[in-house]
Image (cartoon, rainbow, N blue to C red; front, side, top):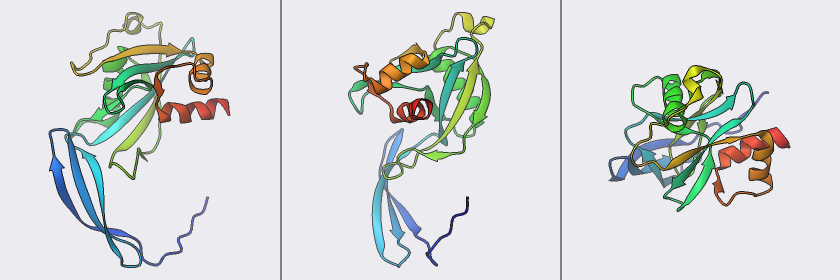
Amino acid sequence: MEMTHQMSKEAKINSIENLYQSDWLSLDKAHWEKSNGSKFGWEYVKRNQCSNIVMIIPIMKHNGKHVLVRQFRPPVGRYTLEFPAGLVDIGENIETAAKRELLEETGYRGKIISRLPDRAVSAGLCSEIITVFHIQIDENEDANLHPKQNLDESEELEVILASKDALRELVYENKSTDLIDVKLSLYCSGLFI
C-alpha cells in the first residue's frame, strides 16, 4: 500500500515540560508546533520506570481456549476482562517481558508464535507504546498442568479460560458484568465479523 503526504512541513515537538511526577507516572506538557507554524501545548501521561508495554494473546495448543485475566482496575472502579499484559522493565528484552508477564499473571509458560509491530494505546492521553505477542501454551506440558500465578501484592486478578463461543458471548452478547477491555473487543471483531 502506498501512502502520500500532502504537507511539505510536518508537526514537531519543540520541548517537553514536566508538570507532575510520582513513582510510576508523570504528567507532561508537550510544547509543539503544527505544520503551519502555529504553536500549542498538549498535556499527557507518561509511565516512569518502564520502556514499553506488552500484551499477550495466549491460546491453548490442544483445546484452543484463550487465556484471559479478570482484573480489578482502580481507574474505572470495576473488574475488567482482558488479555494478560504488563510493563517492560528498563533494559529488559521485550520477548522475555512477554513470557514473564504471562507466567506471573496466569502461571502458564508458552512459546511465542508471532509479534505485532509496536502500536499506540491511547495516543491522545498517554505515551504508552504496546507490543502484542501471540503465545501458544501447550496445556499438556508438565509446567502447565498446575499453573500458579506470581502476582504483585497490589494486583487482584484471576485467570479465565474461554472458548471461542464463550468469547462471543462475553463480547457480543454482553454476558459479562465486567468491563471488556477494548483490545479484547477488537481482537474478537477479527474472529467474528
